[in-house]
Image (cartoon, rainbow, N blue to C red; front, side, top):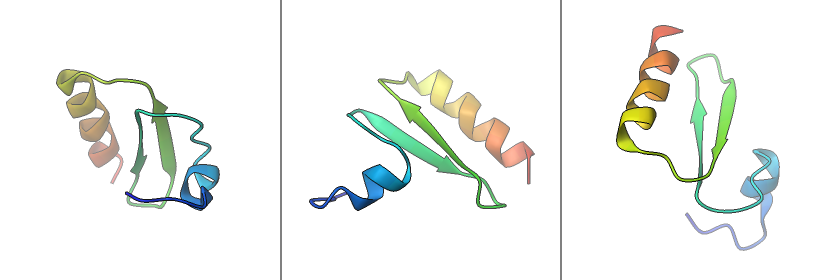
Length: 52
């Protein structure tokens, strides 16, 4: 995603890459910084979906 002004990075407190944000159904954002293996990403997404 192009964020040349840094607005999105600032909103989710991202200060470097790689990084990603999971937004729960209720709108709660969870920012994860650093590289993530597929198994860890699957777990984070599963946990997020279970909250819905």
